Amino acid sequence: MAEKRYTDEQKDEFFRILDRGGTVRAAARAAGVHENAGYNWLRKTGLTMQRATPRI
Image (cartoon, rainbow, N blue to C red):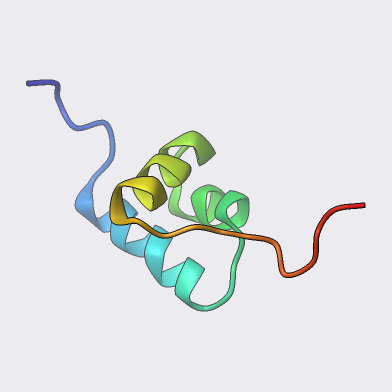
């Protein structure tokens, strides 16, 4: 099994920031993880970060 790249504390901090309304990019930066890891964690939990309004 692969070694964990990020700690459970980093993952918890990432989700805490998201719960407060932060973006994936900002939450990942604040938690010290790569934003792709954040998106992967979201996918694995079944959450999505859909836009409130479509991009024009």
